[in-house]
Image (cartoon, rainbow, N blue to C red; front, top):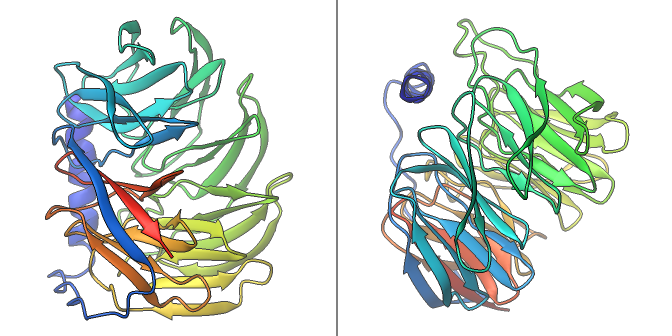
Length: 374
């Protein structure tokens, strides 16, 4: 397992080194006219871990979250603790949550299920390899995407293996880097080759697959087209964005590509507000008209600030940056309309909407509830 993580880290380092010899300085933040009020309501610390970044999950009136050092907890919508347990081992990727149980993958490649009521252990299962993406769960199964290209479904009650699918990927890549999306009985999985595969969640059979990015570059590392953003599924479409590849919008029922544009948008894409919003690798935030792909806006005010994937935050588009700042953008114009500093360390994962506002989790394990007022 540790060897797999070392290989992954080496690949990421080489990818970074293969681009520019030096990273550009982050764009300095300028004063903005805040048209959306942001207020810190509550903050908890779950402990820092590795560099994967962990994202909380909201299910109805509950929030499940984990820290990289091994702490896992369930909170109410106001971030009041219901329980927190310490697994005493690092956690990678994040949490899965279905209201009945919380699921995490540890750095030594174990899937752990915890009862949502009190944090007691439900099961512990050894995986064939590590996983740096969060598991996802429905009421019957929990799904894990491993670094050796296996997609696995386990019974959410006891951890029994229900089905296993192995991808047929080729060449150098960072297997299992992009999170999965579970929607209406289907799993949408973007593999590092730029292939989007939709699986039936109950049996693992492929419903359809489509090449959504074509790798370019002189070296194998330059041709990696991975993404740290999950496929964005909303209404009748699914959108993807990749490194060295394309932003693509597809018909979610059959995988037909409706439109695509060339873009280096490793952090990810968001379908919302009749837009496809992407964060490009250099920090430019761009919006495209959902039906046609026509450019609506492009905002360079956050360039080189190592932004997260975009997310819905109230009536705005939200991203976090390398200094833990939550930025809100207008979906109509792309202008910055709100900002809140939630800490001094990097916010690698996208903010998460709750009924009370938004959650921002930083690399040091701080989880902040932010109230959003128009």
